[in-house]
Amino acid sequence: MNPTTRRECYACGATHETTATRCDCGEPLWIATPTDGFWADWPAGGPDTIWRYRDLLAVDSPAGLAGAAGGTPLVRTPGLDRGGTRVHVKYEGANPTGSFKDRGSAVGIAAALTDGAPAVGTVSHGNMARSVAAHAASADLPAVVLVPADIPEERLAPIARYGPTVLRVEGDYGRLYDRSLELGGDLGVPFLNSDVPLRVEGQKTLAYEVCEAFAPEVPDAVVLPVSSGGNASAVWKGLRDLRAAGRIDRLPRLYLVQTATCAPVAEAFERGDRAVERIEGKGETVAYSIANADPPSGARALAAARATGGAVLSVDDDAILTAQRRLAREAGIAVEPAGATPLAALSALRERGDVEAVEDVVLVGTGTEVGGGEVDPADVETVGIASVDDRLAESLSSP
Ligand SMILES: *Cc1c(COP(=O)(O)O)cnc(C)c1O
Ligand SMILES: [Zn+2]
Image (cartoon, rainbow, N blue to C red):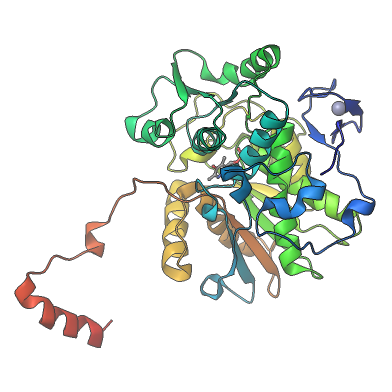
């Protein structure tokens, strides 16, 4: 375990001995990783979970579900190759509750247990809420989840299943992100929100795993969706750790993908700005997990894309649904719409010349669909038992 209590600011370079989540300059902090003896074993041995990197994490593995996060498959997907580009999918749907959020929740819960926190909380109505509630249940810790009042029943059920205290909040939900961190700080209840240092700490292991799988090579590009910017920050952090410790000699380019109806980070990238403007009146999108109009780590995500020579771009709903279908039909991988945005972006990246032939590109399939989904009637046929033989013979002879 890395016993440091030091946190660093990517933007101004300040380091703080603090449990605060933000630097005096306003940007989010992350936990400092040592570059010395900790890195003696690389590639690392040990369990196929995030705890394989326990020496590089701020906490030790607890018992229960938190012990199971990470170690997700990196699938080589020749069916998705085009024009010589070699495509790989890091399948985060294989985490215990179906998304990369489990990496961050596992570290957050481990810290809460170590610190003797009375409960944990989060502000989320999606994968993060589910992940925090599940990890809390497994650790026998109470959890409080703040959801917006208008959350539909089918999105609430998968969260409520784990028995957290669910508060449906009426009013300006966006305000709760910072408010919950303050209130939680006062009460000693960690809020494991999307870009807090403990969450970023756990989620950085995604980058460790990808680089370990490619060692001694480094993939040319990693493509992932961005919403709050927490995960993009985490991946960047993991890559920076590896380079600082001399385990990789260059960083893959990070391409971050947004949904066209809510793309504040992509718009700031286009404008050449360093700050991200909150979007007013965002539209509907199929990619419900990436619709943050006011991303708390937006500027850090922008910095990650720029510093690695990547970009931030957006894709529309049609492209996302097409990519979701292609991932299933050409690679056998089921993701929720947000997790399909990297493939949707890949065509644009190829056309623009950002991604070239003979490059290795990793698409992060960030989460899988839990329940729900729709079937296209054209994909299914109903047959009577008497005609099954005939229909079977027919379809097998002309599949
Ligand atoms: C949370 C989430 C994202 C966005 O990650 P951020 O850290 O908020 O940028 C993308 N895809 C899925 C499936 C998610 O659950
Ligand atoms: Zn700072």
